[in-house]
Length: 267
Image (cartoon, rainbow, N blue to C red; front, side, top):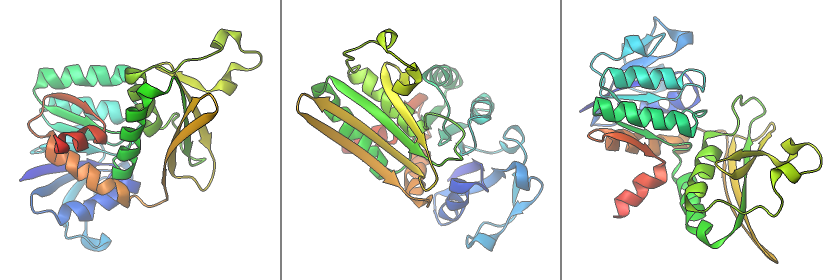
């Protein structure tokens, strides 16, 4: 049995995770974190069988008897939450966005020192993972490529975790070429997006988007576009998150991307 704490339990994805955990024979929710509901307990009012699970204001006080912390909070606290869990010897599954490559390097080092595992994904949707895997498969054959990141107008962090993870993955395969360097641009350089590990990423924030990520590869006289779209339901992220929970126990250090776990399943 794997004992869990869900940070962000009353948030968008957290609310969908609670009933899924309660219906899993190998998972037990022992605590939850939500600043807005601290001091209360989770009840069965959401259709789950979870009763009397305490809700805490912060992760540090919620880690007793926890094997895995699932973090679906925000860019403001995810790093602090992750380090608190690692220091207590708990494994971590990170679904929150906003962390940089340097942040993940630090998390990897701390996790290895603690002898526990971390699995982080910009997007725990299986279809998003397939889109990312397809993009990484195509990348060696295309010298040019840029990422477009679409999200709600209320999303505070840019780029999204999905887009950042994709850009960092593309850079490891092949950094896209640029026919004109950024210091040769006439006009506001911001119009060319931001460089993430040498990959240009453009963040669009508009109502009606949830999370959509697009990679556009270019060759003379042709283009290839790979795109993932999600609507306003958190349901697509539940199965991938629970897969990560089951895979993180026994690991040491950081694993990035749900696509990595899916490739492991094939191997």
